[in-house]
Image (cartoon, rainbow, N blue to C red):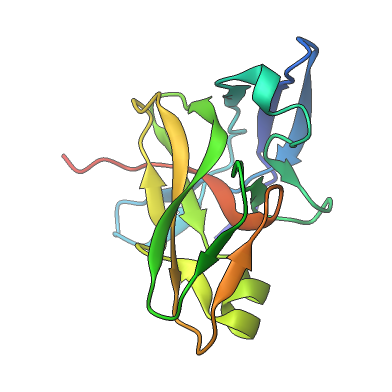
Length: 171
């Protein structure tokens, strides 16, 4: 019923050791007593830490980042050693080269990039995918080609979006 502007602090660590925080607006949804979804008036803050698994192999890549100030999702780049062609109907797991630390009470949703899906039929196999707060391994993106033609992914191509979201647990 009310729209607030809670803040999410996104902390990134770069391969050269420098780190910084960026602030972005993130709505918080909670289930009310009448089982409707309402906006919470409180500020929602969390820190999400992205870090390279092998920094020496990722100096040419960017950690997840918002393309614009109004973006909801952080763009994710492919950390492929060489280009990858996915045939129509083909599936492949694409490495990102980084891990993520998500605090308890949050998840990261892995979503397709709309341009890839609409133009080429390239999407996420289990969209939206979920990265749980307790997962600490390398993030890998399951891609499927639903298009009519082979599609080639190159190192550094933006292949998915990550959306940080609070998680409500059932009692």
